[in-house]
Amino acid sequence: MKIYHLSAECYPVAKVGGLADVVGALPKYQNLAGLQAAVVLPFYDRKFTQENDFEIVFAAATLLGNRRLFFEILKEKTNKLGFELYLVKIPGLLDRENVYSYPDEREQFIAFQLAFLDWISYSQQTPDLIHCHDHHTGLVPFLLYHSKLYTRLAHTPTVFTIHNGQYHGAFGWDRLSLLPEIDLTKTGLLDWAGGINPLAAAVKCSWRYTTVSPTYLQELTYNSNGLEYLFYIERAKGSGIMNGIDTEVWNPQTDPMIPTKFSAKTLAKGKRANKEAICKRFELDPEKPLFTFIGRLVVEKGADLLPAAIERSLLENEGEINFVILGAGDKENELALLQLKNKYPEHCNVFIGYDESLAHLIYAGADFLLMPSRVEPCGLNQLYALRYGTMPIVRTTGGLNDSVIDFGDEGGYGIRFVQASVQDICHSVFRAKQLYQDTTKMQLLRKQMMALDFSWTRSTQQYIELYESLKLTI
Ligand code: ADP
Ligand code: GLC
Image (cartoon, rainbow, N blue to C red; front, side, top):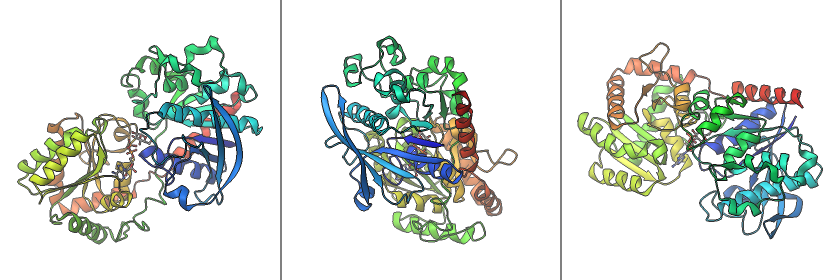
């Protein structure tokens, strides 16, 4: 089976969050399972593209409204990522450094989708399936089935995976002319709430859609930023498949980004050495339990609750705990955290920015990872933390609900709380601190966490079964 994955991000080419991790791993494991999965991304002018060799496999022009855009398809020469990687390059539009936040983001991703479709159409390819990820690629199913340009491909099955249903990529009908000629009797499929909504269009037009955890599939029917009714009526087409993690990249025994490698056997020594490395860097006392947060400092992640929760926890626990925060996002959250760092320099340190190696070090050396997410379609941080023997403290939402069992429950190994509130976070921090004092129990729980299997094996199989079921319906 030949499959194209279409995405805005893919690790290690271009990463902003978990979408990159998934698109950088799932195709690799699908190929190991016998599929022919390739990834198609926009071209970004970043380290990976600068340092690797590419060949031009196709060149043509596509039309974006009345703009004629010359594009090239570049293929990474060695397949070193475990899959064929294709980049769509369009001078001035798809050759920039960052993934998001350009004022013409809509044009950027529409052009990406059109160039992809033109490429497979002109080069007479017949993929067995096209797998689109998030709203940046959400117009592909509609265009495949309802634009005359791609009639030859109109029987191609499409699967659409929702990594984040909060973002829809919507834009006004005044920009319909950015799309190629479409069947105008089908415009209702593009519409939601009076605008063109790529996420809604993908849910309507793809053959099947998936979410990145089973709980998130349910949650979308009551929390999806206005698409609740759509998810409710289309629910028969949806399935929830929990993400896995790339156990080659995230392996404490071989991780080149951590100073001291460790296994379940050398856990105590290994974690201690990595904790000391973090504490040295951030000037904290390694004897105290170390709590951390890694991620986007946005409301979705509950990052706005952190400053108050950290301060109150420090007071309630009489300074017997420490915090390290790694992240970037909303300016007011960044500022509030930096103020906290100034106020409690012995207990709280903050790194504002994106740093992949530091993230690895923190997963390896911290004791507890806080995830007070309001929305968490899957969450990979808790899975990385578990693999490195760091206990996740999570709000029971989305994939956090599906992957973390409270240590107070049978077979449990983490800490769960229900409300995204300062109160619930502080209570959980208190429970964690109590547990930390019981070193034998903590050690046993860490071993248990490290033995959990969140590898891609099971989820890869679920995707393959989904693909196979679509083959039968062709
Ligand atoms: P999301 O995709 O919603 O941001 P996930 O939990 O799925 O959340 O994935 C986040 C990924 O991004 C993880 O690999 C995490 O380690 C990484 N990450 C987030 N923020 C940072 C940061 N500031 N520095 C380094 N890595 C980060
Ligand atoms: C999104 C979600 C996150 C998920 C990731 C990968 O960014 O916010 O919860 O883990 O996609 O699927």
